[in-house]
Image 1 (cartoon, rainbow, N blue to C red):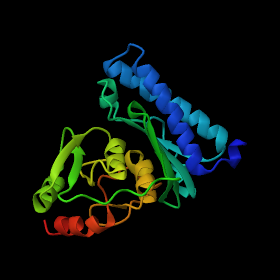
Image 2 (image 1 turned 90 degrees about the vertical axis):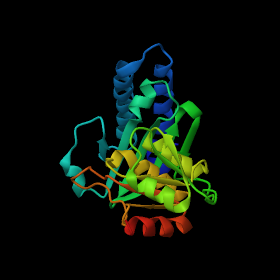
Image 3 (image 1 turned 180 degrees about the vertical axis):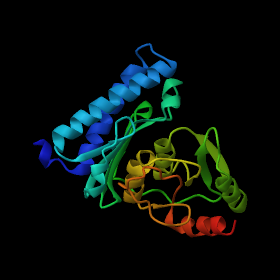
Image 4 (image 1 turned 30 degrees about the vertical axis):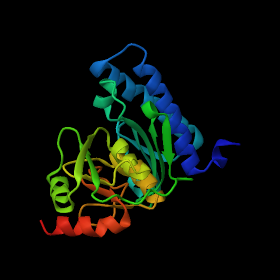
Length: 246
């Protein structure tokens, strides 16, 4: 099959899986710390850019690890990638890091894949199984270093438990797979942190929005997209009501 015949989600999955395998090899080749993280970022970014440019020549790519081209904002299609989401977890030899390859079409997270190489998994927006029903009380995945005050408020209101976890991709995929029930983040993310995870979560039938309930919009000039809610649709109404009442 030619590169142009490969669907967007299939392409995202293939590239995320290949970049994840490269990162996994580097992680177990003897490096450590900040040097390992920097090398992982560089190597995975180079691989993803090369594969996307070969398969989708002329399309824009917005990467955390590359210089931005403002001309992308006028394009309907823009690939949004995080070659290594959770660099600190990766450098510390933890398992909760990810590779994000997402595609925005008309500002919507239309397709994507999230690789979890340390767990041997890749989740894609194509063929994604429906997320399991949320449990009661819910498990809420949060940052290991700075749990959002909003997540604490939701946990208190719903009797839920906070579960610290590393990268944004790992947290979002925990909800997709049913290991967690809510991913609520505030305090700062960029579009590459959540575009691919949002595409996969939407494909799994989950609610995905900003904390005020508005949709996530991509390929704007400003790459800052600071807050995020991923959960089952029946849970979203309750969570948004708790947040609105604060």
